[in-house]
Amino acid sequence: MGNLNGNLATHLQAIETDGFTIIKNAINSAVVEEIRNELAPFCQGQKPGRNNFEGHHTERVYALLAKAPAVAKIVEHPLVLALVDELLPENYLLSAALSILVHPGETPQPFHYDDAAELLGVDKPRPRFGVSTIWAFDDFTGTNGATEVIPRSHLWPEERVAKESEAVKVLMPAGSVLIFDGALVHRGGANQSNADRLAITPQYCSPSLRQIENMVLAVPPTIAGQYSEKIQNMLGYNIVSPGFKGYVDGMHPKKLIDKHYKGRKYKADLPAS
Image 1 (tube, one colour):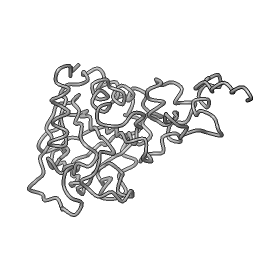
Image 2 (cartoon, rainbow, N blue to C red):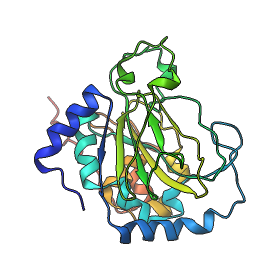
Image 3 (cartoon, rainbow, N blue to C red):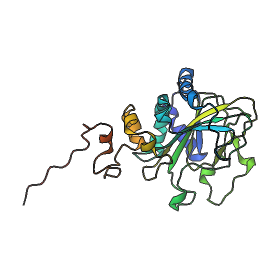
Image 4 (cartoon, helix red, strand yellow):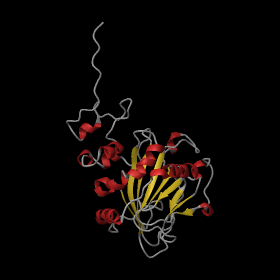
């Protein structure tokens, strides 16, 4: 697997300056195949996209952690989270996690960004509210629908419109991951090849934002219990500290997973004066 080590600062600087960075070969071929195999039953050509954003020649699988448990290996990949830990506030959440299988003949997506902050009334350029990742499960090539990014567009003013000539294709081998600022303008490219292109995109957001995907319904307590505490927290089975935002019926949401969960200790009552 890849290794950040001393390159952490380099990757962080690339995200600050250009809006994105790439870690090549972050997972090995065995992990790639394990996840592909778990996804295969859900990618049978039965549910094409419903519009030109989802892609009429694209299959998207949502609620991945309820369907393909091995996806946890990329959601909480230590190299990625080392970066997200530096880029987002503590208690950040998993905002979305979906696979995108682009078939031949697909057209380019509309340009967009992922941070889901458009309803906050905070125009770009704005503080960072989200970090997205796109994992390649096929080689991203110049013709098979590789993601296209517009470098430095996370710093643009809200009214600036993306131009085709500004887009750069992200070319990377299977097992690699693109990590980018949630305000970076990007899109899925056109698939002009004769082969499919599979990607998975876990996206992370500030704990102050509502997640794009309603994770505690997508991954209910009976399923969330099989995952690490880190993933449970990112799904929303957590309380933002200090404070108590996120409670359920006055209790820590982790009690929905483990009825014996003790949670935080209450302060002892003060003696009467």
